[in-house]
Length: 430
Image (tube, rainbow, N blue to C red):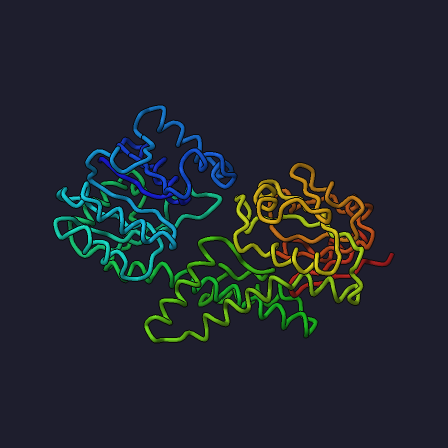
């Protein structure tokens, strides 16, 4: 099929590479805010496994063409929109362009996270001679290629047979293992995407509240988590306490759902609480640090492992580390931070500072001369450190685990003090 793909989001780059890889003729029009000349150099794209390689293959094979203006496009059979919520006006301008309005039988696939009802509005603009479907973005950052080409589910919002048929054919190569489409009306698909992330965020925030209660009561939250997860009505997914969630999609989808509630006249106290709890949990490690040193933090040096909002990405959008850094710097704390991918994004945001040193290769470099270690992002390279080496490097022999990935008793047996989210252990005396 001839596909015109519009946008500069991760979802746009992934769709361009994947659709071209199975023989579709894809013309990709990046958004003016991030043209290909800039997009091709960003760290989050270059660090996404397999994606850049497949983009380069598509360009070399000729199945993928990157264009700079709409007038360069051939007549498409499918228009695929993959824009950020702030780019709704760009979607409007595209579908109202005479080059497209004058055509017949185009299927508009809205892969953007826009307000509920936006696909219908765009359909009205492009004209009744065309068809539209809502195909909400369900990519997982850090494994975008895999989640697009081997999906477990796809929400497909369509109100006529033509839109469903064309979308299924377009994505047929990625639907061979099992049926992954969940078909429903367009508005239902748009709301379902927001509702899913709202539910996941609620589980995370609830578990973080339980972890805080466990801390107060002297209970190891891991026992509570295991007991809750074993209940078949609950399960273990998204039941891990931590120092807060972030990310461009998860965070803004939650805010978008709250906006939908408000605009419909239904204020959501629950969603407000979920977001408030998450922002508070981003301060958890700092509060533990403050309590340990009784507020005497000036002149301390803190080692931080992880800046990205999740493993596998170079992005720091709404990442817990940003809140943590502000609190530490306000108290005169020096920071030595290691992250294998997100350091450039961090420097782009905070600049060069005398109280920040960064490392991208050896995590132990960040610990040299530090008083303690904070684990913020659970990259696999951090899971099995040399504890005795850490004990020799950290002056206060303190580990604050913001993701509960370590065994408190084992860390304590190596002579370090462990503080997690609802978990703790003191050094063992021999």
